[in-house]
Each structure stands twice: as C-alpha cells, then as structure tokens.
Length: 77
Image (cartoon, rainbow, N blue to C red; front, side):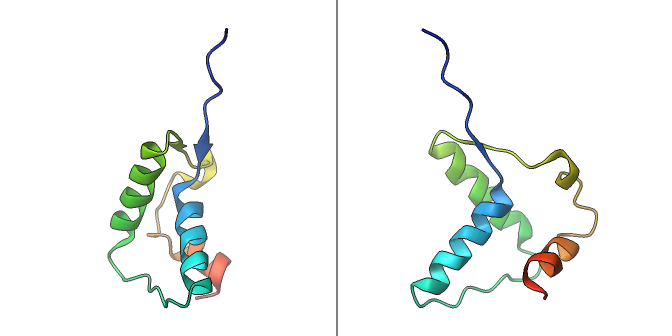
C-alpha cells in the first residue's frame, strides 16, 4: 500500500474563497492594510489543520509588492 498523495492548496486562494463565502452569507469582510501576514498565517494554519499543505505556485511565491498587484488583478482594487 503506497503513501497517500500529498494535498496542496494556495492559502491566498483560500482567503479569496472564504471572503466570497462570507459575502454570500451577508457579511462585509475587509482586507485591512498591514494584516496580509495575519490572513496568510491563518489560512495556512487552517489548511495544515485539515491535512492539506499550504502551497503557492512558484511564480507567486515572491511577494515583492505586498499583494498589491495580486489584489488589483483579482478584485480591481
């Protein structure tokens, strides 16, 4: 019997997924300036707690602009 296949998920994608879910449920989540680290750490911890490794695409691993470009591409903000 082989080892189970490693499961991975992008923590930034999880943040977007959760934000969308909260909006659907009538909440108004805000991405507060300076709290990106808290969001990523929380998403990564949740994934690990569910047995999934937090993993980003190699090209996304360098966050030189503090997610500004990522957010503008996704949300236009």
